[in-house]
Length: 578
Image 1 (cartoon, rainbow, N blue to C red):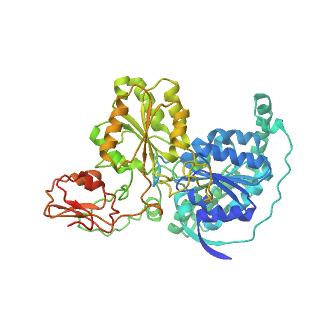
Image 2 (tube, helix red, strand yellow):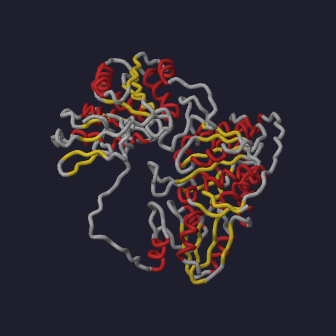
Image 3 (cartoon, one colour):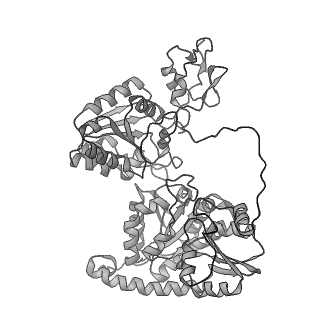
């Protein structure tokens, strides 16, 4: 049956049709929807793990147990899961195992633009790269057979445009794959040095087999057209190049690793001018040059961001694009925290206190933007707590009295608690603030171990942040509503002054949760407004200035009352107040 599907949904459909039974992931844009969609199939057990490493280890365990298993993550999540990834290459699989990794060229929702193809090469694993939703489904199905055939986990490389674009797919029936027998085999699965040496031999033998397969497989195909222009490409870059130069000859690479050799040489011999079109790193280009092929690549294109049809026509054909412009000065619209965001009061307070703030990954990272400007660093998941500890060890106890770490509830469970243990174990005195908004907000409201619900919204054990902090050795634990500005400031000041580790939990649910009641919008009494602009200091998008007076957009305001608390003249009022 033909359907229009997002790439991520098509991958989930491929899991279903391939007979996959276990999926464990950690949400990360642009990969999140794969596991959310997989959870809709009763035949697939799907879960959110606390982090990507745990998710991959669960998938490895399921594979060893004989099931077809899956895990998904974004590109930086693969960094977290790299340890089991490399060793799983040595152990191989029992049931087929697929790992989806979604890169983010252009950094739409990421802190870097790393290219995950390098992981496939370094770990010596096969990587497939679809270029539309139909291939997302087909490649996913085929990956399990390839995994079992070559005894290796298979990587599926996606990107923002492939994951979040729609195209036609042709769905099929589910393949019922019986659970494979588990046989005790420590030589294969116990990676102590003596066994690992033997498994490395198996890995290199497998490398020769998958390289031979890449030379003549259905995923790498030649599309001959005008022989004056040849293009080697794959993934979403194939779509851009094909639309820009439909008459050209193409070698479309559906396997990103291992790359073929003779196929590339044969194609190069058939065309006059040869380009390699790929986003991010010159991965294919470097391989071609190592083969002695004369290609044009990154000297013509950028290493940065996403490509487009217009960009390729300009760089290859010299066609200058024409643009329509406006004389109006259109203001920029950077992302901001939502009206009623529970983190706004905290960042306002931290900004007023002038403390150094080690930040973390989440929607609260927007606390770094004006006018709040209350964040000094953001590196990776969990780095706020560990980084603050190192910062204060370097600068001394006085630094600890003027610095904090901020981390969300889901990120704390992901990789924050180990940093907290590092503080207590190594006699640090840093102050950590856990922003508990009752959900994983940054990737679109996924459950996490603190919410009491599974991925399939089934009730489960609710992990207590307070008890985890207590178990980590923290004696000073405070809980506060971040909209109670006076109490919040008082608690932060007291904990900064303490000569021991402390944790402050700012607890208020995300305003976008369906269970959160929205209050009627506030309004401004223009007669009482003195144009002090104090209300603008919280950076709420519902508040602006009009004709010298503050105004509140009733369509955006959710009645959180934070602005009213700041308005000393009393100009901001509830809907039923004169």
